[in-house]
Length: 100
Image 1 (cartoon, rainbow, N blue to C red):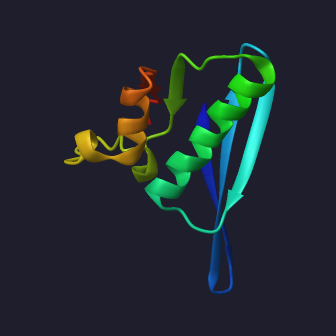
Image 2: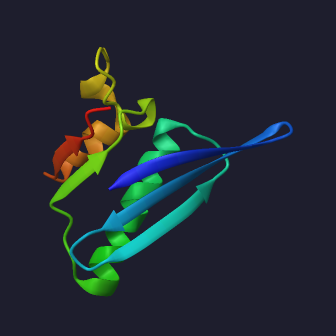
Image 3: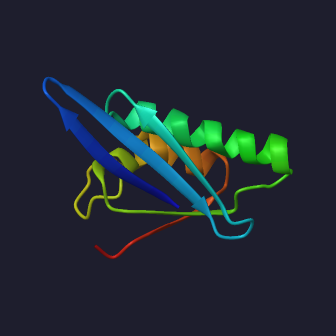
């Protein structure tokens, strides 16, 4: 589902948060001014809301890479308090992540 790409300009960093829905074949991308976990979590929440409001589609499962913004580092100590992890737990969305 989500994959982040960082764009670096002199003294400025942007983060692209992309979402691909395999069921309805829709891709969404949002450009963020930073790569902080809370910002990424709200961008993903916004896309969930758009899918629900516009297409009446409920998100049941999410797959991400192992980036720190998603809270799925192999030896992460803060999984339970990570914003992205909490969002998915609260919304009862199954969380899968890539092996790399």
